[in-house]
Amino acid sequence: MLVLHATWSDGMLLLWGERGGAPTGNPAGAAERPGKGGNSPHPFAASADELAELAPGLTGPHELNLWLPKRGGTPMASPTLSLHAPGTQNGSGESDLGRFLVPAMRIPPLRAERLLDGLLDTAAAESQVAAGDSLPFFATLARLARSLVCQQRVVPMVMQLGGTASAGSWRPWLGDEPASSRVVALAKAMPPIARAAVSETDDDAWAVTDLALGSVADALCREARARRRCTRRSRPWPLRTTRRWRGCRGS
Image (cartoon, rainbow, N blue to C red; front, side, top):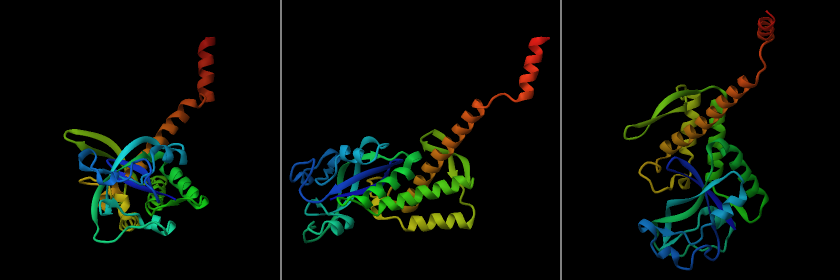
């Protein structure tokens, strides 16, 4: 059984997966051997190749550093994996949080809605693939971003990138109650795994919702503007302009 998750980290939406049963991709006991930066490789994580096969259009691979519940040095199975693989055992005793590294693939913001919907369809059709709560959450977020863009509820803003660097970005305009209430409700419904990245900023539900929503909205706006420029360039000259040009040639 493969369970898919999506987590926001460092300005990217990343897809990763966990498997039930014996460790895959890492030797037994790998979770107890600290890796880079004191983090442990997740012994049940799906490989980047497995993820890439599920949805063409993902980019990577990337490495994702996560805070996950653990018991005895081993990451505990997610509720979704425990539900679909009843034989998965989380052991007994006290649990706490540990840092684990997993292979991941990036979900480009422009294709987020289509890719996430496709992954949800795959999970519904395949008996050995399931979607964690974070996939429908980010799929809903991507649809909300498209809805706001279609309603032209976006404004250009200058975003600070750190230090003195900055960049222009299209951001959702949430100045009225209907739009802001939808975003607030979405942030409150965020599953913990969606913001489980080891980061100083990516563990706050509102911050992650705002950043992810803005990322998808900006990508959609830029694509729409690019299409509009291409359409304008491909239009034939107006008839009156053509006639004037021909008249000039004949004079």
